[in-house]
Figure 1 (cartoon, helix red, strand yellow):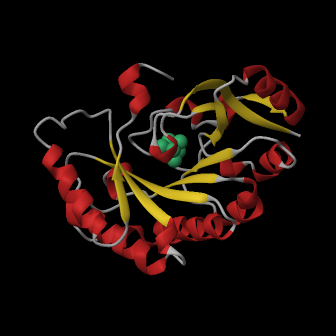
Figure 2: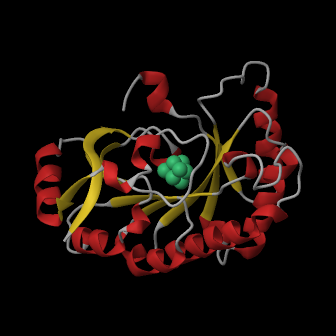
Figure 3: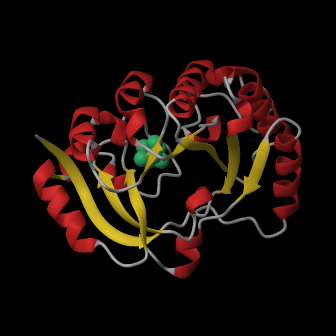
Length: 244
Ligand code: SF4
């Protein structure tokens, strides 16, 4: 079996609750969404990856193991586009693994959730997509995104039920309203089956800049989310250090 893979490399995890851990990143090519802040736009197109077999991937990973290795990061693109490949790759694997997913494919998550010890599930906001389609998260109304949030919550519930340490990641802009983040956290609190097992990571978007003078807004977002759930504010560390 083969799947399109952009790159396999060893580095330090620069996001979320495994930040600082040495990981081997397996980045799949292809994505079913198109976020405007995407930091791996080249990986959206499945045809941009090299088709690699499970055996070849095992060999590549083995050659990258270092003494400080913590876990695999199965990322993309969107890795849940390739559940059969991931199942074959991780089934019987001796390594711990983190799934980094956009959370939009619950049926595929159901098939392989048990293979992950850790999971990061994106919670998308209207600002992540082009202007005409998705409403406006500079307002507090979250109803625009009912379908995608429903799917993200399903994926969170599946992963937690299978024992993965799961957090949700919300990329925010200087324009994102704190009460929008609060409403997202409220929705998660209400609809996640075991909300005490879920944390929210608020991740300031690196690319647009503009945080100078706007960092108090991060405190407001954290406060609003903290009314409903465990919350962190964590920027991308690998960018600050010039790591991959
Ligand atoms: S879901 Fe992730 S990989 Fe896909 S477009 Fe959005 S940020 Fe990029």
